[in-house]
Image 1 (cartoon, helix red, strand yellow):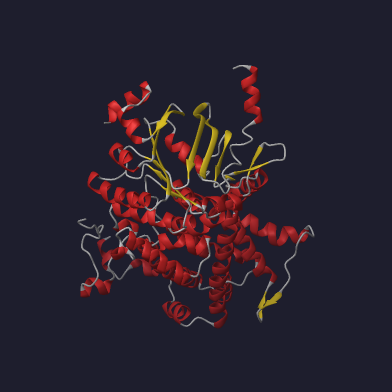
Image 2 (tube, chains in turn yellow, blue):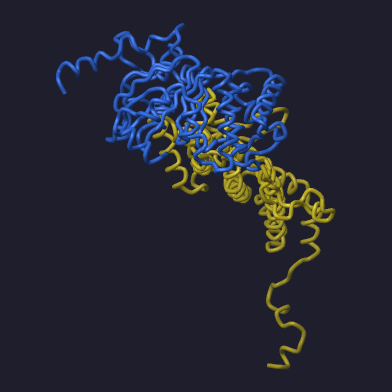
Length: 278
Length: 276
């Protein structure tokens, strides 16, 4: 027993356990162009789908607050169905199911000189419509958090309810909306990997293709995971910048930046309210 | 209730609401009824306020003062009667049969833009500087040029003694300063009527004076005002007329000397004996 352990690590002799570091580093640092294209596809699908989701989600949130009951009913039923069914199932229904029924089939188009495959459109639309249901709830909660006194102050100046929403309520709701919204965007960037199942050539599908050619399964999926991790990490940094900016807009002091800590400028140690003696 | 009374209620007030256009009447409220669920908070309140007049409403908590004030710029819908400011109905339009229907959103907003409202809790917009709080009405509602809106806002803030706070956020201001910004914000719309809803009730005692001073200046300047307040000394000093409300009705009204020295009604005497 003791002799065995003192030998060179026994697990290195286990059958088939071999990590190809050369392949791994090469795939990580110098990926081929189609892998990079897949990576870019993941990024742009995420961004476009999220932008659409925010727009549709805002409409749904306003719909749920509408004075007209058909709008309220539509928004509620939409949110109920979309949040109650899996994204993967929604994907195959939108892309395969709709075209099988002859309802709607996505064909390749060219937008601003860029060819967009039908399957990519289906992916973006489904992700956006799915996320919109979640966004609607996030936005609704943000709107509800702004005190009714704020709306009344806007109305009493002569603003219309629409102006009050746009100028007074939404800018304040944004501070509460951004953290969960950022969380959802993080989740969505990872959910784009589901688009591989309908054949969108994004990051994960490219990793699968490399796997089927090289059988470096653990290595290439680790590389894919690291690329997703890179994306979500960059997003986390962006999100904290946005949050800090929104806080400072509300007069809440920003936490000191690294440079400010170093040079000691513009940082009030207590970060408290500035009050006049008057 | 006798049949005769119910008939007159159904017919409404043919003269009251339309009166005032081009006359000296700024506010004409006729038999205003307001219910919250089954609770009747205003039970037929009628009040006329002349141009340039300062009317102070006093009365115990829950008497309907604040609700009545909020009805005057349609922050509350009313369940009966009618309210006109400068001869035009607030919040409603009259159907050909004389009944009322809620006015279009635009019309309601237009009417409100002529009425300044100052809230007990200030309700400044926390995402804007003091200057933008004051400028946003002219900028967004009147759609005046940006430059002009900001210049006028700065002048107003100077007038309420906050020339050095233009770029301050509401969170950086004291309660008294916030309320002065809120008054400047209402004045920026150049209202013909100002409504003050317990404007000093949320303030620390040492800040009440600075806000009352601003309101006093406005009164001297001839602004038409309805002031709901618990500051009896201030009421006596600034009011042309004092109105006592209790239990959703106007109990008594008269000039401040009469109201504070020799009130006619027992309820007024009781109330004053508690607060003075």
